[in-house]
Length: 122
Ligand SMILES: NC(=O)c1ccc[n+]([C@@H]2O[C@H](COP(=O)([O-])OP(=O)(O)OC[C@H]3O[C@@H](n4cnc5c(N)ncnc54)[C@H](OP(=O)(O)O)[C@@H]3O)[C@@H](O)[C@H]2O)c1
Image (tube, protein in one colour):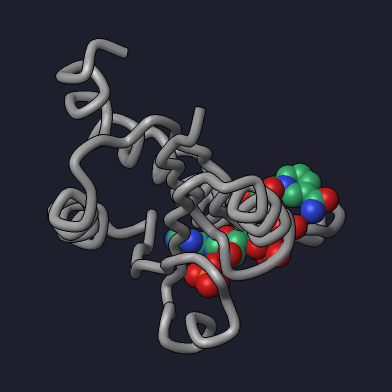
C-alpha cells in the first residue's frame, strides 16, 4: 500500500538514503531541511523547511505540511547531528545544544503531529 511518509532531515546522510529508497518504492515522500532551497533541485521528492530546535519553525511547518497533504501515514524522526569528542574536552554547552535539538526537538515535533495521527485513529 502506498503511504505518505514524512522524514525529518532528508537533505543528507541516512535521511536522504531512506527518502530516496521510499520514493523509488512508490511512496509519497516529504522530506525536511533547514535550507530546502539548497537541496530541492537535486531531489526527486518534496523538501519543506523545518528546524526542530525552533518552536516557531515546528508550528509553521505543521501548518504548511497539512496544506500540502490531507493525511500523514508515517513519521520518521531522523533530524539531528553528532557531537563527537572526549567528554572532558567537550564543552557542556555543546552537549546541551545537541540534546535540545536531537532529544527535545524530536519530542516537541512528535507532540505537534500526534493530534493529526490520533484524528486518523493511529
Ligand atoms: N551517522 C551516524 O553514525 C549516527 C550515529 C548515531 C545517531 N545518528 C543520528 O542519525 C541521524 C542522521 O545522521 P546522519 O549521519 O545521516 O547525519 P547528517 O548527514 O548530518 O544529516 C542530518 C540531517 O538532519 C538535519 N538537521 C540537522 N539539524 C537539524 C535541525 N536543527 N532541524 C532540522 N533538521 C536538522 C540536516 O538537515 P539540514 O542541515 O539540511 O537542515 C540533515 O538532513 C541524526 O539524528 C544523527 O544524530 C547518526
